[in-house]
Structures are given as C-alpha cells and as structure tokens.
Length: 163
Image 1: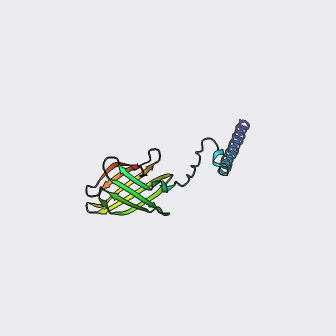
Image 2: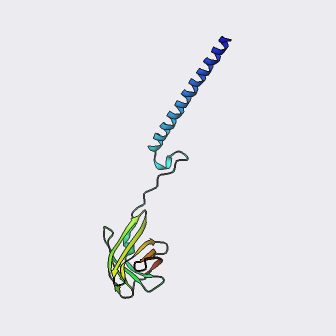
C-alpha cells in the first residue's frame, strides 16, 4: 500500500512541476509579445490592442478671419487677424461696438476653439465659447450672459466678403 501511495505522490508532484513550468513559459511569452508589439508601427499591432491615435496636423487658423453673423440676432463678431500665439484681433457689434477684452483661438485635437470675452456696459464678462465647423463654415457653441448667469446655444455664419 505504501508503494502505491508514494507512486501517486510522485506523479502528483511531477504534474504540479509541469504545470508550473508551462505557466512560467506562458507568462514569459505574453510579456515578450507585449514588448515586441510596442516596438511595432501602430498599424502592425496584435489583434485586440487598440491603435495609437494619430496626431492631427495643425489646422489653418487664418480661415477664421472675416465677419461672422449670429444666426438668431444681428450680433456680429469680426476677426481681423490671428496671431501666431492664437491671439485674435477681434471686434463685436450689437449692432454698436462692444469692448472685446479677450479673444483667442486654440487648436484642440484638430478643432478650432474660439473664445471671446466682452467687458462693457451690460457685458461684465459675458463670453462666447465657439468651435469652428468647417462643413458649415460656421462658429457654433455657447454664449454666457454674465448678468443673467445663463448659457445659450448660439451659432455664427460667415458674412460673404464684399467685392
């Protein structure tokens, strides 16, 4: 009886050793595969691994230069110049001129984001946060009316240049 018991114990120990070696090989192969994948170009990665997001090329901010009319009222934003740092030389008319305190544009993942802040009588920090929509050649976003502390969805369309 003892001989059979020892025989099963030896078989069990050998089986455990084989399983441990196979697990070690599997883990090693998985780690080697991950590090090999990281050296490959993004299009050659293994299945199931999400692709690396492509870096978008800078958008031409000069396309914002022009006059923009709000679609629900006679309010107008005029962008006269885009500086290399994203600073805008801009005017705002309702229909009279309103002081523009801050005007800037930023490229966020290929989307031109325009911010215009107004400081004038009746406009104590009211501002526009707009995204350029190239399909519609429009500026779309929100207007924060500071005195009411409310946001409104707005859109501006380009006013064709006079010839």
